[in-house]
Image (cartoon, rainbow, N blue to C red; front, side):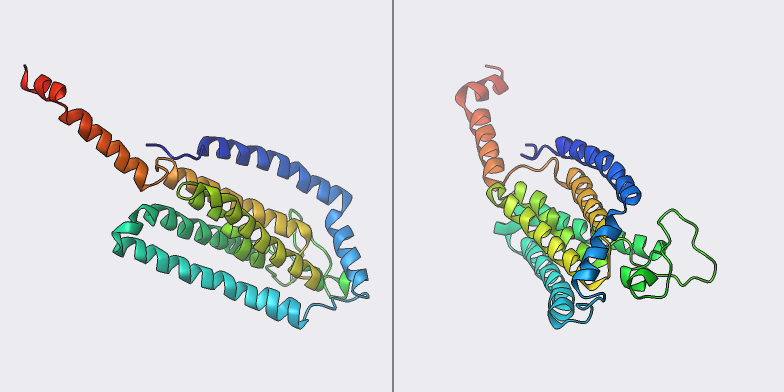
Length: 258
């Protein structure tokens, strides 16, 4: 029995998403969307990053937000272990393993890119009270300029990584799949906006993180869940029907050559 989710269609949507996103990034650069948004926020906070060390922005949305994502990860591991120990939960085993893989792949991929590419945070730039000139993503960084790791948005990935809940729930509890998607998008949006208000990231940093998390979730969903049935009842029903068919007197007689 195949998965009720059409992963090929989702892969196609992902492909079109990247085709749309790349021109959007070019428009961002040509029009200066990142600077327009950051300029507005900077002026709104009185010509400074007023919320950089704010208790709610830093302690609640940043520190506690990261702790929330880590706690969700611990609970996920606990449920996965339970699915191996308790036979009644065995049908959740592969979806939960997928969720672990997707969340891990999303956050690790964002972290690796952050450490491979030097991009400055808004609060580092002279334009916003810092010391550094702006150097674009595809521009050569001047010698002696310190390495920074502000692209893509790492904190937002702690939220957007959970968009994988959509596919996890779609194959086991389809009615809840959009709630899972909303949770991942909501967490990522909250974490991303908070970091923009603190001067830690530009808008494009968060959008790029969302695309990475969407890609990891969709590709791993296709690899791990595409041949998975919707639940244990369907497989048991199929097995029961097969047994009844094979055990009927007519079929038994055929097997005996009567």
